[in-house]
Length: 185
Image 1 (tube, rainbow, N blue to C red):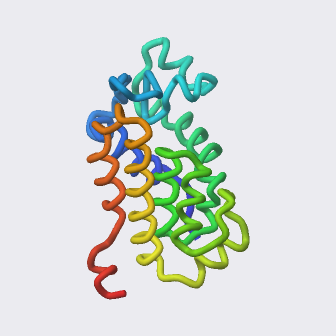
Image 2: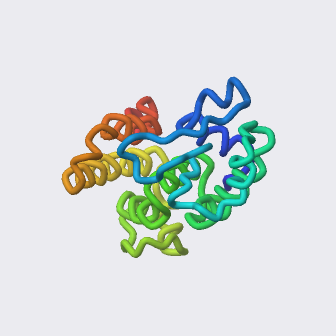
C-alpha cells in the first residue's frame, strides 16, 4: 500500500511549480482565467482561504522548506486521505491523488470507479477497492486517462474560456500511462 511522504508532494510540485524543486522557493502566482486566484504550491487562495500557510505567505515567506509542513498536512488531509490513496497499490495512488488535487476528490473517485467498473457514487469504499484489487494497475491508469480526457473535453464545452488549459490537462491525463506496460497487457 502507498505511503504519503515528501515524495508525493514533490511529485505534485513537478506539475504545479517545478521551479521550486530547483530553487527551493515557491512561486506565488495568478493565472488569467484560472478560477483559483492566487496560488502557491498548488494551493489556490480563493478555494482554500483558511489554509494556515497563507499567514506565512502574506508575510513574504516563499521557502519550500518552511511551507512544506503546511503543504503536507493540507494535501494529506484534503486529498490523499479522502481518496483513500493509502489503501491503493503504489502505482495507482499517485495518479488518483494528483487528479483529486486538480479536479476534486469526488471527480477523482468517480473517475477511478468508471475505470474499474464500480458503482459510481463518488466515494471510494470497499466495493471500489475490491474492483481495484482485481485489475492490473496499468489498465486502470489507462482507463482513467481516457475518462479524464473526456471530463476535460466536456468541461471546455461547458466553459469555453478553459480551452487554453486543455492541452496541459490532456498531457497530464496521459503522462501517467506507461505505454510499455499498456502494450504488454
